[in-house]
Length: 212
Image (cartoon, rainbow, N blue to C red; front, side):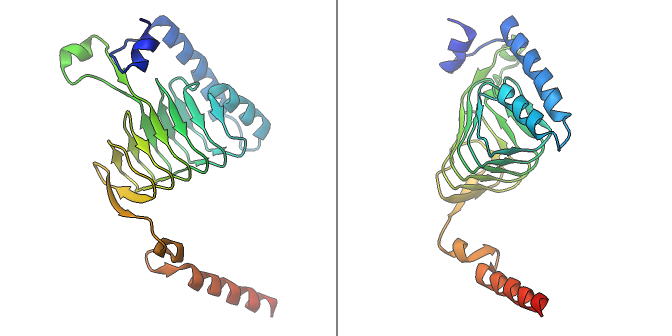
């Protein structure tokens, strides 16, 4: 059984020469991407196509970004990933469409055994991470191996996500727990007691004032 096959089955696996070669290739590509100028849109898009397994055309990826393999990361369309996104992507990480990341989000598919003698052998295990459509992941969130996050979920800043999060909920904490469902009230109130209707009224008044 190859190391990739062991990884796919959730068995302990070990680094190989081919794995290090793959890392070296993507490290060069990451270096080039992270050192491009913001105005170099064409170059940035060409590089990220070489880094990731797939990435949506309209997705925005802020620098810097770090990946282990790159080819195992699949990012949907119309996503916005803020700076310092870190992917420990020994196995697959998938992001749906419309995903938002705050700064400093880490997704890790890989862990090490608890017992020190097993760790000393270089043994690892990896489980895929799946994030649904329209998920908002706050700043400094860490998502652990094997986690699935459902569509439309919001993960509060600073959370450590150790287990699955269902769709249409707000979850936060260390460890991250579901705190409430997303409801119709969230359509009206966008932040605490600040209502969308109130803000639109203020904007309209400002526009009328400017016209005068």
